[in-house]
Image (cartoon, rainbow, N blue to C red; front, side, top):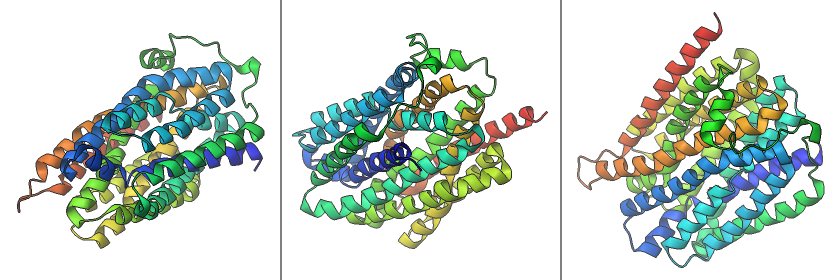
Length: 399
């Protein structure tokens, strides 16, 4: 494995560590800055996440198209530098307004996963891409395993300390990448930049002639609705149901990350070779429903941990879906399709944080009739619809 690939995996790991560092402490920081209850903080936290996703929704097609026009290296380095500086901004935030500004800037330059995936597509054979995309997903899970655990440990020194650590890690990686990351997309393979394609509508129109793209993007959106339900509500759900603090939340997300590493970094390539990408997606959705049902009904930490195993297997669907799309598209379309996938993910990340925390607030009124697990039935619903969409696509595709 050459130094560029090592840098890409390190980038994804550190990107996830940065995200994971914030998850356990953001609720407490919001409470402190806004003098809010945990249920109120959940709504603010959801709105903040939605802001990040909203900006990213519009920025991702632009950055993806830029990566096809200018090359992967400049876009990736710009995104990483912006992320590192953004963590500093959020660490010094004196009020909630500055936290929101920081999230908006992070969304504007949030092209790291998109560009890293396009880079891998440039240098890996089409039939191997699902495996490597799974490894990138495993790298993200590795970072997401360490991030919350590290955050829980650092939070004893203050809820802002994890932000400064995240900034230092990302900026050190930028310096490393400056020396070891070559450009992967040669000039003759680049596609001229066009604002017509550098937006969500233009990107969809660009891929419309490929009949397989739109149905799978719809499925990707539904899958992300289901998966992001878990991430959005986890610190608030476990705090309310199990009275967990930042340390316990961090450790539980660390376990979730371990399972993600196993599923995406180890199992995905093997399962895709066995079943193919489409059937892998279907299997992952069935197992995801089992995990979400367990979360919805669980009332003890043991069940929460046990059902994290099938719930984390839902991420197999994302790697398999990305691999299928990448395998069937040209080299000069890899940045654009990954940008479009990222926009789909961002759209789900807009809607989910704005709706799931409100549902959680409605169903947790402090009485014996509380239903904190009701939020996970939303994820079950979207998983079922995604299964139907992919199943119908598979039927038509195999005719």
